[in-house]
Image 1: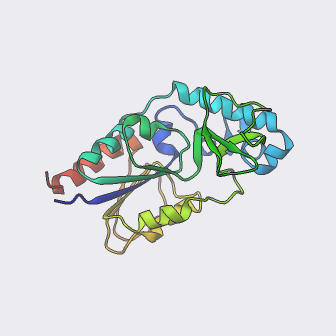
Image 2: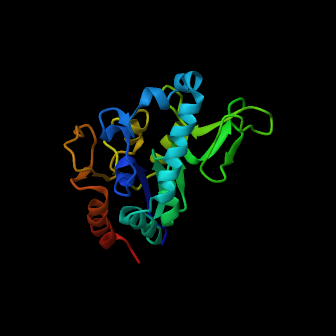
Length: 233
């Protein structure tokens, strides 16, 4: 029997339980940096070295982080569903847990790209990117991250994927960051939507919603219990 298609939109909350902090946890600061100083095109133009070092620190942190049970539960669900993850996270914890279909909306921390040709993307060896590190065309390499104020190139792909869901799961995101927060609007009418979040979110506009008021790790356990009994072996 053909597997149902489970589309997952994940955000910072799922990685937070692996020790990866986000700017939304600390009043607009990201590891004590104002996001406008480290995560915008203007910041790059103003102080390239600061931006480079900021992301070098993020890579070191990621090197020490491990996937948590929520990541592993999502990977395990590939036994029962056709799982497609759309993540706002730039870490690789989904992949390290075993998920095989992951779309990174906001880029990937372990990758870098040319400043002159955004299609030239490379996996970074180690965790340090420095001023003077050039692409084969001779341009400075930058983090492969979608900064604030930049377009999200994969959002249309994510919208098409969202429209194909038989089940839609939102975990670890408070639906505050657009355009990613708008993806649930592409889910077809009648498709069950599950949202895992401990907060009190304004979700009255989402039809067919089941709200699981838990953190990602405990919420994923409940989600698995809810959906697996109805899934054929």
